[in-house]
Length: 277
Image (tube, rainbow, N blue to C red):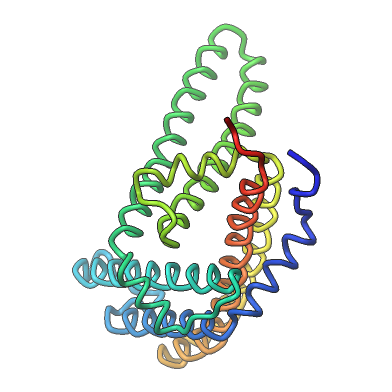
């Protein structure tokens, strides 16, 4: 790979910020609307009470809540990705146009999400089974060596998890942005990753850590608000959502912006490679 195609951590973050700035308004509109929809569904399905074991007491409402939340989340993701894609290409679409695109691709994105996430966990579970069997066999021969094998297997498991996660995200993004269908998105993601695997892997870890910081911030805010539930449940609901909703939207914008820039950067890298004969 030539040096001019490799983008640094700082340029990666700067490009993500520029893209988000261009598309900030429709992004926030989509995310605020989606989060408001999830709140409404949660209230209707009695998911707002943290002390209520809803899955056991109200199984139908819990299933309804899970399905509705999944549908809204897929609409938000697909809409935001297409807003980001158009912003990178110098165009800006409205939230209505983004939702229209998302509606047309909903079943493809839903199918891709289920398929690639299941595939990711199957790969990980297969690796875990093989690693565990290997550790047991080595332990029966030489117990001390099994500790080293366990450490190596743990490191390899982390690497495998993030690699398959990155591949799954790239595949789902390719379907959501209309670039590939469900069946050829995975080979497409593989070709993107292999261009500069370790650099993309490193940037993916950085993006994940940044999103983790924002997610932790949301959790801390909700923890401090929890005593309000002791006073009044509705007061707790209002306090939790009013304070954590902006953080949730920011976290979603940051997460989508960073990971989409990673995906777009991989495509840019691929386009600069010399054509293979």
